[in-house]
Each structure stands twice: as structure tokens, then as C-alpha cells.
Amino acid sequence: MEDLHQLPKFRDCLSYLYLEHCRVDQHEKSIAAHDVNGMTPVPAASLSVLLLGPGVSVTHAAVLALADNNCLVVWCGEQGVRFYAHGMGGTRSARALLHQAGLVSDAARRMDVVRRMYEVRFSEPLPDRDMSIEQLRGLEGARVRNAYAAASREHGVPWTGRNYNRSQWDAADPVNRALSAANAALYGICHAAILSLGYSPALGFIHTGKQLSFVYDVADLYKTEISIPVAFEAAKEGLKDVERRVRLRCRDRFREARLLPRIVYDLQKLLGQPPDEEFAPDSDPALPTPLWSPGDTPGAKEG
Image (cartoon, rainbow, N blue to C red; front, side, top):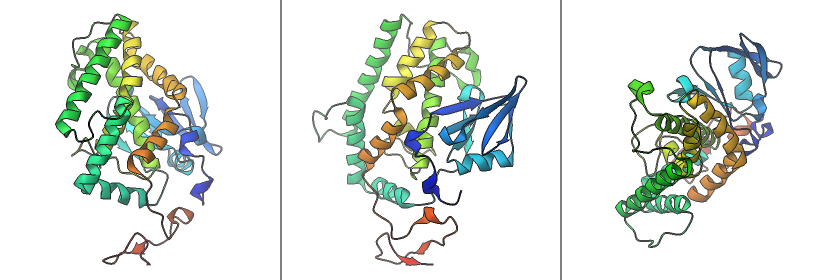
């Protein structure tokens, strides 16, 4: 596709599709999954992220079709509980990334973003705008503990705390396995939104030091609303196929909550609007980038 502006808007897409033990190939202008049951066409233009689990082979033509349709491809572990690699997002512009880096690098502006993130989590203004980061974390810890306890009471599922070992996945109790699967699905959607809007998943504000720090920041805005209820609902039904049931529930809950447009809106509200560019990188993928000079504002000289 020559003009990325022709692509469907990210907030208009479906949420995600998880595939395993199949072959993915190009089908017309989209893709199709081939397995023992035959061929299943996949509407790539209406998909925001494709999760490829174990046993999947994908052709070059399929990846090209996914890229043309602004669908992020993620290579993950079984049931989507590990994240190995991903493709690139849907924009060639660095405007949002530079804006994000400026916020992260300025302690005062970073703290403003942190406070706004906590206000979104609490769904109300902070009781004291001058609260320290330690006080905010204390309030957040209490909020999450209350959410776990409430979900445990509502669904009659015993809760002894977040406890699991990734190297011994099958040893975890049903609710911890369900929580991990729900969080993995939520991380994938948030990661796709971040990349599609041109931000970096590594430049977090509350979390820091890992390549997915900002993904964790954004996902934490929605965990008590989506991940925790979904996980306890699925755990109530037992251990059999718990991860699959969680993924299906997450897909439905993402759609019901209109999560994708909310992520887009929340990111714009949290980080503000990046400054306008004097050139249009998305109109020509091969357009040379501008050159930087000391004292330049985002515009600069063309190379």
C-alpha cells in the first residue's frame, strides 16, 4: 500500500487473533490459516494484532499482506503467555516517539504523566496533587488487593495471592493461570496500540528498565476492569482449557468495552498531542528524513 492514510484506523479494528499449529499464507489481499480442518480466511484489514503461537509457519507474502493492512504480528509462546518478537507499527513518523522521550526525560513532566495515569486507574482525581510516588503506589496496591478480594467473593474462587512459576506453568492454580493468560492478551492489545500510534513500548513512566515498560503502564489502566474479572470468571469453571476460555472471554470483553478506541483516547489524554511535523513521512515510505541542527524545533532541514 503506497499511502498509509488509506489503512483502516487502528481504533476501528477488531482486537486480536491467536493461532497455533497451522500455516499462514496470503489469500487474495488478506491471509488464510491452513490446518488439519482446512482453510480459514482471516480479514487482516479488520485485525489489530495477530498472535502466532507454537507450530505456526508464516510465508513472506502473508507477512507483507499483514503489513499492508497495518496488522501487528507478534510471535508468542503457548496460550500467548510469553512474548518473543513483533513486527513494526503502522506509522513511519517518529513524532510521537520524540514527544514521549521528551516527557520521560523531564522529571517534572514525567511525574505529571504518572499522576494522570493513577487518576485514570482510580477513575477520580487524586486526593492530593502533591502526593509522592510512594504514596501513589500504596493507594494502587490497596486498590488492586481490593479488586482481587472482590472478584474472589463474587465468583467463589479462593484467592491466596499472585503466585506462579513460568518454568512450572502447570503447577499454578487455575486463577493464577487465568490471570496470566488474561494479562498476556491485554499486553498484546496495548502493545499493538502503542506501536500503531508511533510510541515506544520501552519508554515507560511508572515501569522502567524493560523493553515493554510502557506496555505494562498502559495495561495497568484496565486490569481491574478486564483481566481480573475475566480470570476469576474462567477459573470458576475449572482448570480444563482455562487459557483458551480466557482468550475467548478477553476477545469479547475487549469488544464490549470498546477497548481499542479507549486506549487511543487515553494515550492522547495522558501524553498530550505531539507537535506537528513539517514533512509527511507516511505519505512516502522512502522519503529521506530531515537533518537535525542545534536549536531546531521538530521541523529541521530536509536531507
